[in-house]
Length: 458
Ligand SMILES: Cc1cc2nc3c(=O)[nH]c(=O)nc-3n(C[C@H](O)[C@H](O)[C@H](O)COP(=O)(O)O)c2cc1C
Ligand code: SF4
Image (cartoon, rainbow, N blue to C red):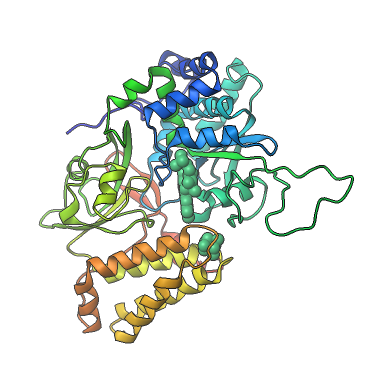
């Protein structure tokens, strides 16, 4: 099976001239002709769903920001790409940076914003080398009108990509998720987040500045939809998940890589594009990042759609998959996921930080062969409370991901409790630095020494 090139171009588009020759600018021209309401209607008709992990309907999100009062509106492109096993946003920003910026301009027009932000990591230097000149070229050409585009260079932390933390970073603070959602307390908002006394006389009335946040792949898809129309978009994919999806595959396959395919393509077909399992091995499981229940290999025929993954008791997330074969011990996988999340938890909500650290300790004990039934019992109790009254979804990720590994591979845990290993323990949470054309993956190995207070041992 072959992939498609809809959002990811076959060849990199590196100058505005090349971009315009590839149809660039036509989406924004259509949006200007349509006006905000018809632009949002077109997106809603296309059925586009956000590619940041949640699959939220983009048209509905834009309509709710457009309708919200409370001050100015802002738009943010989320290019943080912090989810383990994802690399697709970087492939997009490297190969078609202009398309993301045009998507931001269309969003600004639709929700009535005059200032937009494009946030990515300071460490993604090759991405920044493409984005910066693209913004300058588009601004100088006059294409963007009066729109102000600011590129934000953010930190390494996983939470940087979480939308409420992202707004904090744009405002110059640490990536600690704020209490309220971006539509309730957007960029530079002054409304109180909790109880506060009334605005003192003489002060400006408080503003909430509802802010739209979309993943960069979502915004690039918007540009194509406005250029070619909702029915063109719906000619690919399924009724509930139209269009294409850009999939990252790493782990135990012959040739890890990024492939764009129509939605509805079975996961196993993408794994075949990656050369299948290593010689003499069989697939055991896949994690779609660290936000969803684990998928056992007997479910690898699942079509890549939001609805099909839900039917199989998992989630597609941002379509970044780490594949494990039969050499892997799922206790070690659970321990590493839990270590990652407990380190990245910011600690504003004690059930999340203390709970995930506690779960990790029990998993380390079980993995080392020194665990007993009481570790399982205490871990189950912590898994029930780890997301109590939390500000963001990270505690829930710990709950659903770790519980699902326990549920799906109970025999790996039983054997470890009996002191028997069922596979390799050298599991790394796949934070990807680079994937070369030949499938060689460079991982961020430094994370292994990251401490719960976000310092590093090395
Ligand atoms: C812990 C955490 C990390 C996240 N990291 C990212 C990220 O790196 N990139 C991203 O686009 N969305 C990330 N998200 C999802 C965003 O909060 C948000 O839902 C998304 O950017 C919305 O865009 P969409 O509607 O286009 O999907 C993260 C969410 C959580 C809870
Ligand atoms: S749920 Fe966890 S990561 Fe999210 S704000 Fe609370 S402590 Fe921080």
